[in-house]
Image 1 (cartoon, rainbow, N blue to C red):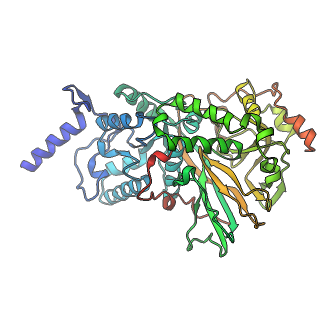
Image 2: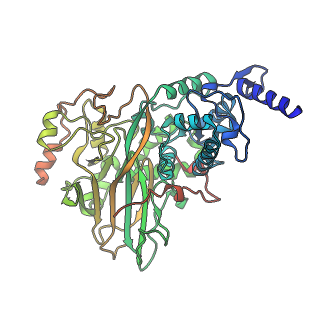
Image 3: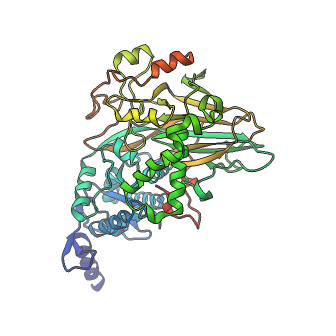
Length: 512
């Protein structure tokens, strides 16, 4: 009797109202539409009877170190209006362990005839609050779970660039963290539409160098965001004796060259002086300054021509299965971007919206996020990049491909800079190796949640909101002039579930 009374009091108090997080006597309403009961979240819990089916059950992951103090404030707010056990701080628990436990519990209760578990699994949505690196981490984990019905993901922007949230209509600015703001965001999550996006697998292989190491170097030699490159294990089927093999996955973009070099400098500075990077505006201002000091605006003087893309590597693309063709890269291109979503460097669209005439003349297709093709764009310097701020501006459109391969020239450079979804690293290149290869290929799809002002376009809904106007190419990006001048194995997983296991000394603040 006492146990039943205790459980009744717990249910009433935990599901309807709790004291405000700041200790005031005012109570905060628990949002039942999103609430998941403890017995589904915690191991070894007994089934609770009489729980209502939530309209939009959510699991919330928050990078409490993102957005200055915003991540921590958001964590407190979400735990006060939801079951605190359905809100996770990524600095305390990794998403792969959380989701493995959750789906184990769901399957166990479903086998015991629990209808609520079946409904929650069917309706479940994930919210991830952080930067692009944090969002990519979650996407990789969900991809590697290989669920029959993977939950769609909504991204709350807490980073600097926030390209992933912007692509799907969640905005670029850091959100409010009060109860009303969070409640409004969750209502948008409930109403959001599912949209499939392509996943991309990246593989790098090189001979083991005679001297030195070739492992990716993160800023200040700290562990890099683990959704980027990670060396495969000796038992992995991709491992090849005498070679170092790295792999990873991305959903927004892979870039190489000067843009990644600037990003690397920014991340290094932020890790040296985290106290200076407390809000989005300061971060963006610092980034702009580093673009100048790194020579991105005077690249022709400060950037060695040996690191220009054409001098650094031979590039090949595949549009049809089994048919590799050489891709001509203008000699002046210092940065190359392989783009999946229409947002780069804080909401800019390097590919733009080609007119029907341009698409036809260059054998291109409209840039959809779920068509199995990636857009390849080049930039000469930061001045070229400023074209993106102009109406209808875009970079040098190089190609669309289902697969792209970089074969690095022997002795071309001892290193280069690379970046995946906002996370940069310095990549050493063995000087005596003729076989350094980076290959990007299509690797299935994941489900995102698209809000009203979604910038991305689906091949299944090509005239989606905010994406209906074609560019008429009235703005000259010098693309055609450049062209005239220059002469125109099966993957088993992305690697996320294993590679996202954080080391003991890893600080989640290293993610954006």
